[in-house]
View 1 (cartoon, rainbow, N blue to C red):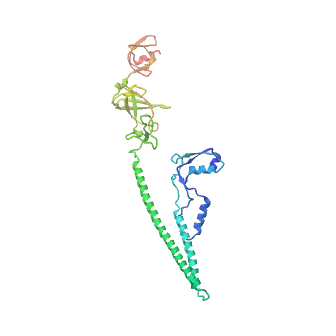
View 2: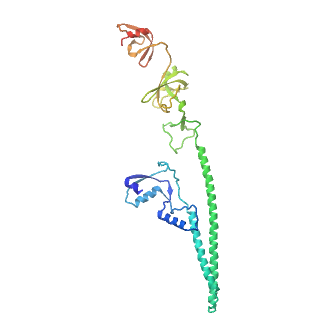
View 3: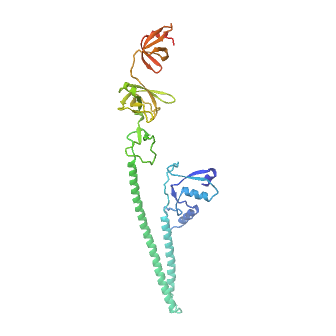
Length: 374
């Protein structure tokens, strides 16, 4: 933390991971006690200093006791970027080492009482006529007291050992019970997961306000949350103006131009026509008909759900039709003419106007086109 404070004016620290920071010297002393005491034996020992604190509060206290005024911003584990998965509550239970420390105290107490017992026993067994009756009775009483104290200390040690075994069994039972509960929770969590019936791309659905649900947010029953798009089977949803809807039929060929830096052109056909007309949006009251168009062939390398496109509906196919630029045709709506190279105007019949092209039905033949003056 101090090293970060030297190079940063502001840092973020996790505030929902609780642990017990341990002083290295305390830990070293406990390790030395364990390795130097043959009575403790081999095994796994948990040890940490007492108390609990979050990393955020720990960092605040570090800076409070230092010269740095670094700003600390709390952050949750979920939002913190890190590869390692950390538990939210990682306090160690020092119960085993505490039990052993208490047992060592009882063992030392027994050893002390054994010394007192042997000393009192020797005094009581001394045959010395020079001692008074009171001294002999006192020695006997001291011996009886030492004997009782030794018995009591041995019983305390035995009780502690039995109690330790019982506590271990209780702890193992608790671990087993909690393990079952955790397994049940994991199974419940697994059942809550929505598994896709097929491969595809997930698309989050926006609500009627155009907002997508966030993690942890409640949603209404029946509210669509996401869609699964299969790129190989993608379709195009088109909006056709009401006046043009009469020209559409199922199976009709469509030219599709994908919007982008480089226009991609595909072909398709109409596979579904909406049943009713609707307004284009709340602001645009223009009536439209939703139409579904199926691609003849998809290209997963350039197509993505959500892309926009323009369509050209092929309403009629004209064989051997002649086309001219729109500006080559003059005249009123019912009297169209083109100007030949000789300067003469020749009447023509216009079949269709497509963009900047005019499709001619009558009036010229293919050989005459070279005479047209634009």
